[in-house]
Amino acid sequence: MSPEDPRTARTKGRLRESLLAECADRPLAEVSVSAVVRRAGVGRATFYLHYEDLTALAVDACADVVHAAVDALHAWQTGPSAVPPAEPPAALAAFLVQAADRAPLYRTLLLQGGGGPLGRRLHRELSARARAEREAVGAPQPELVASAVAAAFTGVLADWLHEDIRAEPRALADHLWRLLWALHGAIGPGGGPKADRTR
Image (cartoon, rainbow, N blue to C red; front, side):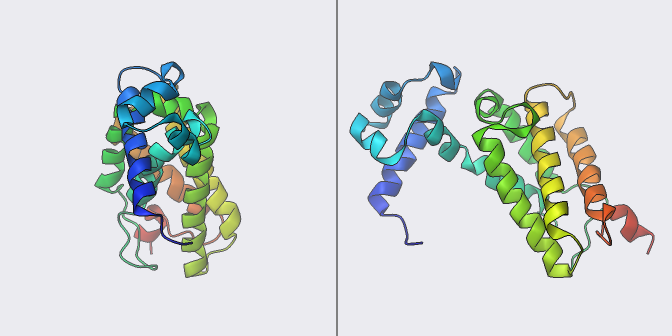
């Protein structure tokens, strides 16, 4: 993939920042393309050159939450054979705190149960990372387990943001950590924290 033209990158960056600013105090459904382009200082034609609609822009603007989630879950890793700690990395709770700050926008894109455009993107990237990890250590059924891990994290995160699950970020991080490693260890040697402590 060729690198993005710097001018295009700057324009898209302004549009992303504009959308996030517009959504700071109102839901995405109440934001208009006109308001976004006015704040960004670009024309409507420029907007539609880069994005099909506001939802596409919103998913792009929220891509950082996907990368932050993946990074937070793997902050403990120093190599492909590193043993996961019994406690979740601090980055996971920190990620949940940050996600809560933008919950109104994320709820528009990440539907209950983990659906929606942001949910699909999060599931795809988490699944790819988990699958690569299992393949690197020769763990069985990498595709199946990776899908289960991605679905569990995405669904729990979505339901928490929609307030169907009530928990403080630190407590949720602990529960999620144990849940995800239980899934990793459910089929063959998954290397979960509990299993490692008994070796």
